[in-house]
Length: 269
Length: 298
Image 1 (spheres, rainbow over the protein chains, first blue to last red):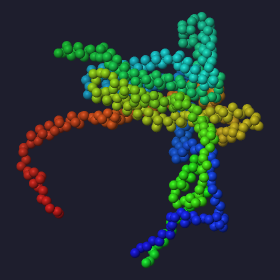
Image 2 (image 1 turned 90 degrees about the vertical axis):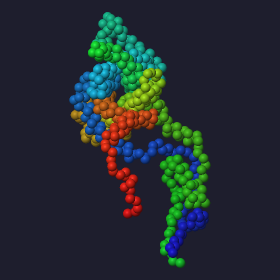
Image 3 (image 1 turned 45 degrees about the horizontal axis):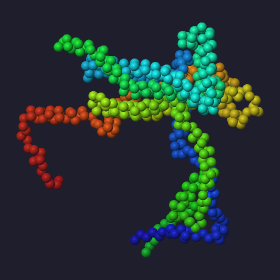
Image 4 (image 1 turned 180 degrees about the horizontal axis):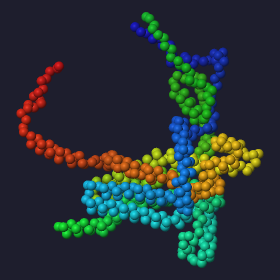
């Protein structure tokens, strides 16, 4: 018979029968810890993910040193810099470029689809191309029409952040002076000036960049510009285009381009 | 009776009284753990919690947290738009493609078959999810790398602005920055940084006189945006479209309870073909399988 003698006594009173004399002899002093209140250091972030964060940091450092830093100073970047220095933004054009690729892929797939009749393929392909064209045009028109309103919103936003409610009017008066100078210089009203003759107007972002340097506001204002473009182009491409433009393009395609096969079929019949 | 072994379980008092608490929450947690621990002598370990000073705690917490929470959600969205344009763009697309568009498709009256509508909604949801998921996973590190590169140039620009200042007037932090940058780029004087090839190229390509102006250069801003968005647009666009097509069936199955009907439609045809083939064969004289069963254990 195996017998195990368990010397452990779970009676806490037995184990910790520490009267003050015994403790004093052992040189141990137990002070009652008392919590008096007060917050000394509140943990903000968990350290659980820190190895992953460190690894991520190293990866992004590597990409930064070996890819982006080199790309910024490469020949394609120089070429892009020359071509984009006069553009106010490229976010809209990049979204259009993305749409060109995806729409192009769908059109090519449709035209190569052997399950469809040749005429049907053409009509469907044309519908897809028309959808892209109408959506792109609509996006640019909508974006341009919202420019002035959004600039006002941005100015009011910046004014609130800077505690300067008059900022919008300041920028407006600067622009009024620029317009007046240009009109007197060329002897024509502003609307009749050509693109080359029109001087660049001051935007809220430019004003902040030139007059209120090294603030967090610059990033927010740049974000405002991007936000408008991604909302406008996103809404048109992702919502209006499939819901409203596709039926319109189908109607145009069927009305003007699907007639021929019908007539030839009729003739053949 | 023989005793084979004596086991002495360490009851080891885990109640160490001189904790080096880094914070009060940890302290409270440990105190709470001790209360849970039945083996701890409550006799002498009777830490008294005299209550948290709510005013002080509230003030401390607000001071700690307010630095970050003062940034509103709108500010965060704007920063996302500026620094990670692709993710912001795909976030907008997610809201539209996985939220508004399916609702619009399903609620629109039309002659279209209901299943067609479901397919269109499924496609929309798939494209929204793939776009956002993919951009977040793949494009976020690239966006961070672009941001780091900008930060590195900014660091150098910041230090270069100090080169004309008297050393005696520089703060400890500024001196540390200077020595860090000198060590990093292996230069003796700060003015040598201007002679480094990489920074010369930055000034030449983006047409700025000093690196501090780089952030305001329209060309730099546009090239940054192109670099940020180009991989998503030109490289991953088609891949995302392919993944979207692959994600449609599970979304239709689990989201709309719709499964491909191709197989179901094929079954009767296959059965008919089998029946026809069976009918074409001469009747077999072989015994049915059941009769081959001998039975018994081998």
